[in-house]
Image (cartoon, rainbow over all chains, first blue to last red):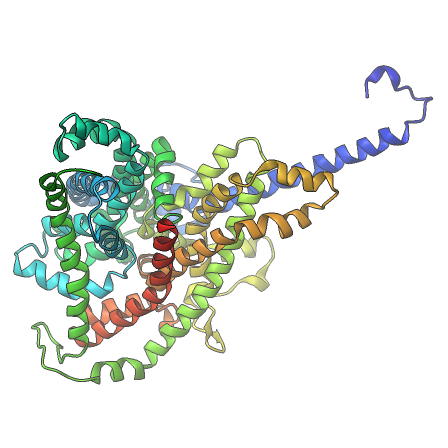
Length: 296
Length: 298
């Protein structure tokens, strides 16, 4: 199809037109694909747009204009207002999420190692019994949980919430680590055993050093889930001073007195930590996601 | 693992606390909830006096619970349909090798990283009847499509129209997830299989219908399990977006359970709703777990 052979006097060969038609058809199909993808992107980014433009508007502007317009005079004031109001809860969320994530990782790693490589009689059944715990509706354990936490004096405190997240995080963290350690060849561990490494040493010297990717996946998964969690938080922490950010945001958004530019700014603040983790370490997040579905 | 008895005992000792915690926090607690559901416990202090099926009768007879059941049925059906269709479509397009695939995938999946409370707040305003989508529809002259969205209590038969915005929001949040599942599945299908069909003159639709879809069927099934058990438990998103809605039009068992138990202190009845939810979820999950276990053994 080189230009040299194409002159205006020469009629294009049938093959040429056919090729060209197919090429245009291909172009149209491609164009359609990208148009579809872009429309979908707009749909997915719509809530982000609404949160951002409203969170950057002054109260006067929210009052009069429509929600969809860009702010005429963008201001960070609502963000600062929301930050000021939510700061204690933001700190609660951090002091809840960080320890719970770390403990979850450690437990998941050691459990996963045993269920993958040190199977004992009944271990598969036990593993499935553990897995079931990640699918139950938590409503079915909520009443006893509240009673138990009040008996041991942890109801209403962040420690109670940490304990809850650690326990109900055992199934997914064990599952991810078990799948991860399943890839380690048995012969490696057999050789280590022959060399005199016992259970703890083989974990510390062989499994642990190659566990970094597993820890990243589990840490991101637990961090995101605990940060975003709402049901346990609203049931276990009653005092506003103790509540994590999701509950505080719901209270903020449910109140009539707080302007909605501040509510939107608050939602942005609550979303930011997990969003940053997702953007920076997204592929590890997706792996955790898949562990919970395809292999679950 | 071939190892001495002591080493193997150490391994068991290491998982014992976790196993014990799960046995207590999952299985003993479930038993405790069942016991509560047969008790007279109403009010702040526990009262386990046997009440027979009183609570079950009370809940099953309450109009709100019937609305819950219908809402769950309609929500689950439409939510599964839209989420799986959207996810499949986007995965199919992305699998065609488009430029910027990473970008699109990141955009479609990001809702999974965000709290349902945040998205509930956003969607509540998007569907707000005075400032939200309606404002856009009016500007472009589509006044016929303007309605009350989640604030509209009207219904078609037993289907509450206010569920539509909730279904849109939930599909928005989880369709990227199903897309990722399908994309993983599509990547596992050998390319020469498709190529051969194309050479044989098969149309794109034929290839999708007769080759891709049958191969993706296990993933459709997995997605139905994951999304289905999610929709039976749905709480955060609805609670923050609409609450129970006008005339319970967006009410779900999880919200009913929460309010009955922790707002009205009707612990016995709350436990009944919790047991009902657990039974529903188990019907979906137990066969699934059993089949994965069997597959793993094979």
